Amino acid sequence: MYCPRVSVIKGRGRSYRGDHAVQVLVTGGAGFIGTHLAERLIENGNVVRILDDLSGGALVGISRLLRTGAAEFIRGDVRDIGRVLEATKGCETVYHLAAQSSVPRSTENPALDLEVNAVGTNNVLMAAKECGAKVVFASSSVVYGIPRRTPTPETEPLVPHSFYGASKAAAEDYCRLYSELFGVPTVILRLFNIYGPGTNKGLIFDLYRKLLRDPRRLEILGTGEQKKDYLYIDDAIEAFMIASERSKFRGDAYNIGLGESYTVLQIAEMIFDALGLEGVEVKPRGGTSWPGDVELTEPDVSKAEIELGWKAKVGIRDGIRRTLEAFEKELGSLPYKRPPELTK
Image (cartoon, rainbow, N blue to C red; front, side):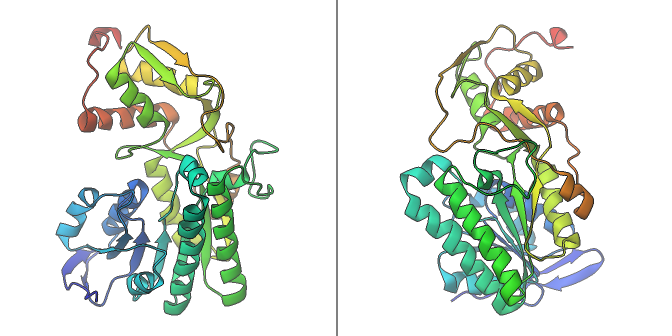
Protein backbone atom coordinates (compact mmCIF):
# COMPACT_ATOMS: atom_id res chain seq x y z
CA MET A 1 0.00 0.00 0.00
CA TYR A 2 1.37 3.41 -0.95
CA CYS A 3 2.09 5.79 1.90
CA PRO A 4 2.67 9.45 0.92
CA ARG A 5 6.08 10.76 1.83
CA VAL A 6 6.16 13.80 4.11
CA SER A 7 8.48 16.55 2.94
CA VAL A 8 8.68 20.32 3.27
CA ILE A 9 9.50 22.48 0.27
CA LYS A 10 9.21 26.15 -0.52
CA GLY A 11 7.65 27.73 -3.59
CA ARG A 12 6.34 31.20 -4.25
CA GLY A 13 6.85 32.06 -0.61
CA ARG A 14 4.65 29.21 0.64
CA SER A 15 5.47 25.97 2.40
CA TYR A 16 3.86 22.66 1.51
CA ARG A 17 3.76 19.32 3.28
CA GLY A 18 3.88 16.39 0.87
CA ASP A 19 1.16 14.46 2.73
CA HIS A 20 -1.44 17.21 2.35
CA ALA A 21 -0.46 19.45 -0.55
CA VAL A 22 0.21 17.22 -3.54
CA GLN A 23 -1.49 19.42 -6.07
CA VAL A 24 -0.81 17.88 -9.47
CA LEU A 25 -0.31 14.47 -11.04
CA VAL A 26 1.70 13.87 -14.21
CA THR A 27 1.07 10.46 -15.75
CA GLY A 28 3.99 9.43 -17.91
CA GLY A 29 6.02 11.93 -15.90
CA ALA A 30 9.29 10.04 -16.34
CA GLY A 31 9.17 10.38 -20.13
CA PHE A 32 10.64 13.11 -22.30
CA ILE A 33 7.78 15.60 -22.20
CA GLY A 34 6.64 14.54 -18.74
CA THR A 35 10.04 15.18 -17.17
CA HIS A 36 10.20 18.69 -18.61
CA LEU A 37 6.62 19.35 -17.48
CA ALA A 38 7.24 18.11 -13.93
CA GLU A 39 10.30 20.33 -13.66
CA ARG A 40 8.36 23.38 -14.84
CA LEU A 41 5.48 22.67 -12.47
CA ILE A 42 7.88 22.47 -9.53
CA GLU A 43 9.57 25.72 -10.60
CA ASN A 44 6.12 27.32 -10.45
CA GLY A 45 5.64 26.25 -6.83
CA ASN A 46 3.60 23.09 -7.29
CA VAL A 47 4.07 19.77 -5.55
CA VAL A 48 4.14 17.05 -8.20
CA ARG A 49 3.26 13.37 -8.12
CA ILE A 50 4.51 11.26 -11.01
CA LEU A 51 2.87 8.03 -12.16
CA ASP A 52 4.89 6.01 -14.66
CA ASP A 53 5.46 2.33 -15.40
CA LEU A 54 8.95 3.12 -16.80
CA SER A 55 8.22 1.28 -20.04
CA GLY A 56 9.35 4.36 -21.96
CA GLY A 57 10.65 6.72 -19.31
CA ALA A 58 13.48 6.42 -16.80
CA LEU A 59 14.00 7.33 -13.17
CA VAL A 60 17.34 8.95 -13.96
CA GLY A 61 15.52 11.82 -15.65
CA ILE A 62 13.49 12.69 -12.54
CA SER A 63 15.96 11.64 -9.83
CA ARG A 64 17.01 15.22 -9.18
CA LEU A 65 13.39 16.26 -8.76
CA LEU A 66 12.75 13.42 -6.32
CA ARG A 67 15.79 14.35 -4.23
CA THR A 68 14.44 17.85 -3.67
CA GLY A 69 11.27 16.50 -2.06
CA ALA A 70 9.20 18.55 -4.49
CA ALA A 71 8.14 15.44 -6.39
CA GLU A 72 7.14 11.93 -5.48
CA PHE A 73 7.04 8.88 -7.70
CA ILE A 74 4.60 6.00 -7.99
CA ARG A 75 5.51 3.17 -10.31
CA GLY A 76 2.30 2.04 -11.95
CA ASP A 77 0.41 1.43 -15.16
CA VAL A 78 -2.58 3.56 -16.20
CA ARG A 79 -4.39 0.33 -17.06
CA ASP A 80 -4.44 -0.42 -13.30
CA ILE A 81 -7.43 1.57 -12.04
CA GLY A 82 -6.47 1.01 -8.41
CA ARG A 83 -3.03 2.50 -8.99
CA VAL A 84 -4.51 5.42 -10.89
CA LEU A 85 -7.02 6.17 -8.10
CA GLU A 86 -4.19 6.03 -5.58
CA ALA A 87 -2.04 8.41 -7.59
CA THR A 88 -4.85 10.87 -8.29
CA LYS A 89 -6.02 11.22 -4.68
CA GLY A 90 -5.52 14.77 -3.42
CA CYS A 91 -4.59 16.22 -6.81
CA GLU A 92 -6.24 19.29 -8.27
CA THR A 93 -4.96 18.80 -11.83
CA VAL A 94 -3.97 15.70 -13.78
CA TYR A 95 -1.67 16.10 -16.77
CA HIS A 96 -2.28 12.86 -18.64
CA LEU A 97 0.75 12.06 -20.82
CA ALA A 98 1.13 8.31 -20.26
CA ALA A 99 0.70 6.51 -23.59
CA GLN A 100 1.88 3.90 -26.01
CA SER A 101 3.19 6.47 -28.49
CA SER A 102 4.83 4.43 -31.25
CA VAL A 103 2.91 4.18 -34.52
CA PRO A 104 4.87 1.10 -35.70
CA ARG A 105 4.31 -0.61 -32.35
CA SER A 106 0.60 0.12 -32.52
CA THR A 107 0.50 -1.76 -35.83
CA GLU A 108 2.33 -4.71 -34.30
CA ASN A 109 0.06 -4.85 -31.25
CA PRO A 110 -3.22 -2.92 -31.69
CA ALA A 111 -4.72 -4.45 -28.54
CA LEU A 112 -1.95 -3.10 -26.29
CA ASP A 113 -2.22 0.29 -27.93
CA LEU A 114 -5.97 0.36 -27.29
CA GLU A 115 -5.62 -0.73 -23.68
CA VAL A 116 -2.96 1.82 -22.75
CA ASN A 117 -4.27 4.80 -24.69
CA ALA A 118 -8.06 4.38 -24.54
CA VAL A 119 -8.69 2.25 -21.44
CA GLY A 120 -5.86 4.00 -19.60
CA THR A 121 -7.38 7.40 -20.39
CA ASN A 122 -10.79 6.23 -19.22
CA ASN A 123 -9.20 5.17 -15.93
CA VAL A 124 -7.60 8.59 -15.51
CA LEU A 125 -10.93 10.29 -16.21
CA MET A 126 -12.75 8.03 -13.75
CA ALA A 127 -10.18 8.88 -11.08
CA ALA A 128 -10.43 12.59 -11.85
CA LYS A 129 -14.22 12.37 -11.53
CA GLU A 130 -13.80 10.64 -8.16
CA CYS A 131 -11.45 13.25 -6.69
CA GLY A 132 -12.73 16.37 -8.46
CA ALA A 133 -9.60 17.02 -10.53
CA LYS A 134 -9.35 18.67 -13.93
CA VAL A 135 -7.54 16.85 -16.76
CA VAL A 136 -5.13 18.20 -19.37
CA PHE A 137 -4.84 15.45 -21.97
CA ALA A 138 -1.87 15.07 -24.31
CA SER A 139 -3.29 13.94 -27.64
CA SER A 140 -1.52 13.89 -31.00
CA SER A 141 -1.65 15.30 -34.49
CA VAL A 142 -2.08 11.74 -35.79
CA VAL A 143 -5.79 11.85 -34.90
CA TYR A 144 -6.36 13.72 -38.19
CA GLY A 145 -4.89 10.95 -40.32
CA ILE A 146 -4.05 12.12 -43.83
CA PRO A 147 -5.33 15.73 -43.75
CA ARG A 148 -7.82 16.81 -46.38
CA ARG A 149 -6.67 20.40 -46.08
CA THR A 150 -3.65 22.23 -44.75
CA PRO A 151 -3.13 24.14 -42.56
CA THR A 152 -5.38 21.76 -40.64
CA PRO A 153 -7.85 23.31 -38.14
CA GLU A 154 -9.31 21.55 -35.12
CA THR A 155 -12.65 21.29 -36.94
CA GLU A 156 -11.17 18.88 -39.50
CA PRO A 157 -12.79 15.40 -39.30
CA LEU A 158 -10.71 12.83 -37.43
CA VAL A 159 -9.92 9.94 -39.78
CA PRO A 160 -6.86 8.25 -38.22
CA HIS A 161 -4.38 6.47 -40.48
CA SER A 162 -2.93 4.28 -37.71
CA PHE A 163 -4.07 2.31 -34.67
CA TYR A 164 -2.20 4.82 -32.51
CA GLY A 165 -4.22 7.64 -34.06
CA ALA A 166 -7.44 5.67 -33.56
CA SER A 167 -6.72 5.08 -29.86
CA LYS A 168 -5.89 8.74 -29.33
CA ALA A 169 -9.06 9.84 -31.13
CA ALA A 170 -11.09 7.50 -28.90
CA ALA A 171 -9.39 8.93 -25.82
CA GLU A 172 -10.32 12.43 -27.00
CA ASP A 173 -13.96 11.39 -27.26
CA TYR A 174 -13.85 10.05 -23.71
CA CYS A 175 -12.44 13.38 -22.48
CA ARG A 176 -15.18 15.31 -24.25
CA LEU A 177 -17.93 13.01 -22.99
CA TYR A 178 -16.69 13.03 -19.41
CA SER A 179 -16.93 16.82 -19.58
CA GLU A 180 -20.37 16.84 -21.23
CA LEU A 181 -22.01 14.05 -19.21
CA PHE A 182 -20.21 14.11 -15.85
CA GLY A 183 -18.89 17.66 -15.63
CA VAL A 184 -15.25 16.56 -15.44
CA PRO A 185 -13.12 19.53 -16.58
CA THR A 186 -10.97 18.42 -19.53
CA VAL A 187 -8.90 20.06 -22.24
CA ILE A 188 -7.15 18.32 -25.15
CA LEU A 189 -3.79 19.33 -26.59
CA ARG A 190 -3.06 17.86 -30.02
CA LEU A 191 0.72 17.84 -29.96
CA PHE A 192 2.65 17.82 -33.18
CA ASN A 193 6.26 16.53 -33.35
CA ILE A 194 7.93 17.57 -30.09
CA TYR A 195 11.73 17.64 -29.95
CA GLY A 196 14.46 19.06 -27.75
CA PRO A 197 17.09 18.18 -25.12
CA GLY A 198 16.37 14.91 -23.37
CA THR A 199 14.49 13.19 -26.18
CA ASN A 200 15.51 9.69 -27.21
CA LYS A 201 13.39 9.35 -30.33
CA GLY A 202 12.11 11.32 -33.27
CA LEU A 203 13.62 12.62 -36.50
CA ILE A 204 16.33 14.92 -35.13
CA PHE A 205 17.51 12.35 -32.58
CA ASP A 206 17.57 9.63 -35.25
CA LEU A 207 19.55 11.75 -37.73
CA TYR A 208 22.10 12.78 -35.11
CA ARG A 209 22.71 9.17 -34.05
CA LYS A 210 23.29 8.19 -37.67
CA LEU A 211 25.74 11.06 -38.13
CA LEU A 212 27.61 9.93 -35.02
CA ARG A 213 28.22 6.62 -36.78
CA ASP A 214 29.14 8.19 -40.11
CA PRO A 215 29.19 12.00 -40.52
CA ARG A 216 29.86 11.72 -44.26
CA ARG A 217 26.82 9.66 -45.24
CA LEU A 218 23.22 9.88 -44.01
CA GLU A 219 20.49 7.39 -44.81
CA ILE A 220 16.94 8.62 -44.24
CA LEU A 221 13.65 6.75 -44.18
CA GLY A 222 11.22 7.30 -47.02
CA THR A 223 11.75 9.79 -49.81
CA GLY A 224 12.87 12.66 -47.61
CA GLU A 225 9.96 14.73 -48.86
CA GLN A 226 7.82 13.94 -45.82
CA LYS A 227 6.80 17.35 -44.52
CA LYS A 228 5.86 17.89 -40.89
CA ASP A 229 5.54 20.45 -38.11
CA TYR A 230 8.21 20.32 -35.38
CA LEU A 231 7.71 22.06 -32.02
CA TYR A 232 10.46 22.75 -29.48
CA ILE A 233 9.93 21.26 -26.01
CA ASP A 234 9.87 24.60 -24.15
CA ASP A 235 6.95 25.79 -26.26
CA ALA A 236 5.08 22.53 -25.69
CA ILE A 237 5.50 22.85 -21.92
CA GLU A 238 4.29 26.43 -22.06
CA ALA A 239 1.15 25.19 -23.82
CA PHE A 240 0.43 22.77 -20.96
CA MET A 241 0.90 25.53 -18.39
CA ILE A 242 -1.27 28.05 -20.20
CA ALA A 243 -4.00 25.52 -21.01
CA SER A 244 -4.28 24.54 -17.35
CA GLU A 245 -4.84 28.19 -16.43
CA ARG A 246 -6.89 29.60 -19.30
CA SER A 247 -8.89 26.76 -20.80
CA LYS A 248 -12.63 26.60 -20.21
CA PHE A 249 -12.20 22.83 -19.64
CA ARG A 250 -15.17 21.74 -21.70
CA GLY A 251 -13.41 19.06 -23.72
CA ASP A 252 -12.08 21.50 -26.31
CA ALA A 253 -9.12 20.46 -28.48
CA TYR A 254 -6.20 22.68 -29.51
CA ASN A 255 -3.48 22.20 -32.11
CA ILE A 256 -0.11 22.67 -30.42
CA GLY A 257 2.54 23.08 -33.08
CA LEU A 258 4.97 25.57 -34.60
CA GLY A 259 2.58 26.37 -37.43
CA GLU A 260 5.32 25.75 -40.01
CA SER A 261 6.23 22.52 -41.78
CA TYR A 262 9.57 21.28 -43.11
CA THR A 263 10.65 18.26 -45.11
CA VAL A 264 13.07 15.67 -43.76
CA LEU A 265 15.63 16.87 -46.31
CA GLN A 266 15.24 20.46 -45.08
CA ILE A 267 15.70 19.36 -41.46
CA ALA A 268 18.80 17.40 -42.45
CA GLU A 269 20.29 20.47 -44.14
CA MET A 270 19.62 22.57 -41.03
CA ILE A 271 21.39 19.93 -38.93
CA PHE A 272 24.39 19.98 -41.29
CA ASP A 273 24.54 23.78 -41.04
CA ALA A 274 24.33 23.75 -37.24
CA LEU A 275 27.05 21.09 -36.95
CA GLY A 276 29.31 22.64 -39.58
CA LEU A 277 29.12 19.64 -41.91
CA GLU A 278 29.70 19.86 -45.66
CA GLY A 279 29.41 17.36 -48.45
CA VAL A 280 27.29 14.82 -46.57
CA GLU A 281 25.91 12.18 -48.93
CA VAL A 282 22.17 11.89 -48.27
CA LYS A 283 20.59 8.58 -49.25
CA PRO A 284 16.78 8.33 -49.05
CA ARG A 285 15.56 4.73 -48.82
CA GLY A 286 12.42 5.50 -50.76
CA GLY A 287 8.92 4.21 -50.17
CA THR A 288 7.07 4.99 -46.95
CA SER A 289 8.78 5.47 -43.59
CA TRP A 290 6.58 2.92 -41.77
CA PRO A 291 2.98 1.63 -41.92
CA GLY A 292 0.56 4.26 -40.67
CA ASP A 293 2.95 7.19 -41.08
CA VAL A 294 1.31 10.49 -42.06
CA GLU A 295 3.71 12.23 -44.42
CA LEU A 296 2.20 15.72 -44.24
CA THR A 297 1.28 17.64 -41.10
CA GLU A 298 0.75 21.37 -41.03
CA PRO A 299 -1.50 22.69 -38.25
CA ASP A 300 -3.60 25.78 -38.06
CA VAL A 301 -2.60 27.03 -34.60
CA SER A 302 -4.80 30.14 -34.53
CA LYS A 303 -7.36 28.69 -32.10
CA ALA A 304 -4.74 28.25 -29.37
CA GLU A 305 -3.46 31.76 -29.99
CA ILE A 306 -6.90 33.36 -29.90
CA GLU A 307 -8.51 31.40 -27.06
CA LEU A 308 -5.50 30.58 -24.86
CA GLY A 309 -3.01 33.27 -25.79
CA TRP A 310 -0.40 30.61 -26.64
CA LYS A 311 1.97 30.75 -29.60
CA ALA A 312 5.29 29.05 -30.25
CA LYS A 313 8.33 31.27 -29.70
CA VAL A 314 11.29 29.07 -30.66
CA GLY A 315 12.01 28.95 -34.40
CA ILE A 316 13.09 25.74 -36.07
CA ARG A 317 16.76 26.68 -36.57
CA ASP A 318 17.15 27.93 -33.01
CA GLY A 319 15.41 24.83 -31.66
CA ILE A 320 17.63 22.50 -33.69
CA ARG A 321 20.75 24.33 -32.50
CA ARG A 322 19.73 24.04 -28.84
CA THR A 323 18.87 20.38 -29.29
CA LEU A 324 22.14 19.50 -31.00
CA GLU A 325 24.14 21.27 -28.28
CA ALA A 326 22.42 19.03 -25.74
CA PHE A 327 23.00 15.92 -27.88
CA GLU A 328 26.72 16.68 -28.08
CA LYS A 329 26.87 16.67 -24.27
CA GLU A 330 24.62 13.64 -23.82
CA LEU A 331 25.68 11.44 -26.75
CA GLY A 332 29.10 12.80 -27.73
CA SER A 333 30.41 14.97 -30.55
CA LEU A 334 30.78 13.90 -34.16
CA PRO A 335 34.16 12.40 -35.10
CA TYR A 336 34.50 14.86 -37.97
CA LYS A 337 33.44 18.47 -38.16
CA ARG A 338 34.31 21.40 -40.41
CA PRO A 339 36.98 23.74 -38.93
CA PRO A 340 35.35 26.29 -36.58
CA GLU A 341 36.42 29.31 -38.65
CA LEU A 342 34.40 27.98 -41.59
CA THR A 343 31.14 27.74 -39.63
CA LYS A 344 30.87 31.48 -39.19
